Length: 279
Image (cartoon, rainbow, N blue to C red):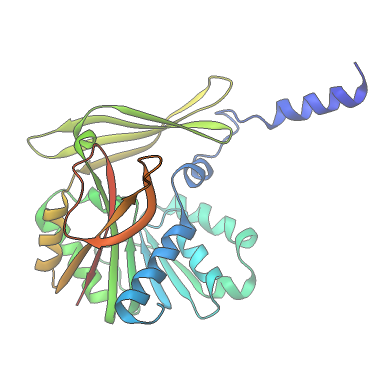
């Protein structure tokens, strides 16, 4: 065997992902997040509802702040505030900023360690609560209090954007596996209690060498329905709450990544929708 072939094979072997050599936050970004699509949706909604573009956003439960980063990169007039209660993930996000943003862009991004139910920030055009993280609030009173804090944080014509998931499969104790470049993402709906609506979900990551990151992320949630969320947003002071439902690709039967306002959804096994709350 030639030296050239030996070097090539060695490099390939070293580049393979393993549990020990992987960073769970990086894996989460690669397998779960779509910051460009979220920012596109913000622009879509603002053009439709306000006939202009938003400038100032707050990303609640921001984690690695990937969407906030994408937002300040999008336009020089954009600013973002990321809020999360987890000091470790915010430290990870801050350490990544020099490679993600230039100096001018970093000046337009603020990361805050705080409880989203108590944080005080300057008024923003848009508050985001994505990836269902607000499902951590398990009672109507807790959720209403959070929604009221968001209402107070918005500028006069501000919009609150949040996502939700559901469908018949959402109430089952099942696993969903999906191949991502270099690893397998596993969504594990480990427990669902129909009496309380509480759900315990995990994210695991599996690698080509059969090693795993088990319970890399744990979610102790209540599975909220769209009618409940719409009612609570109204009770919190929002005058109008609109559901944006994903269309279906006629060829594949899967979602087409196009979200439009609707008053009627499809009773399918699994869906993701956006809610837009406004004055």
